[in-house]
Length: 153
Image (tube, rainbow, N blue to C red):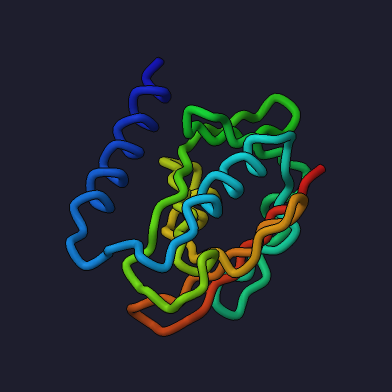
């Protein structure tokens, strides 16, 4: 129960931060893109096939984990008896470059353990298909680029 409360609190904070943004008019966003990404991720289980943190390939850290993206924005990672709970959300991005998919952020939040904390971010959607979601994040601090790819099991 404590985990659900914490994940809900994190998700609420993220939603409030995005909904208060005054520089996003969403004019280039195809609203069907949000629904499509959400519907796709709600379908089945997923695995991390690539996680590049800057220059380090850390994909193996998530080997064997099945990720489930629920309709109520709960994100579950399960491997054997190990279950990690977080949250996820698709939101409009404050940048407006004319491409409907790249105007969306895929927000992931975990409160632990350490390797899952590294996935916590507001990722830009690089591409999305029915069985693959490619995410990218350019760090504002050190300028490094991170890549995260989920593929359907």
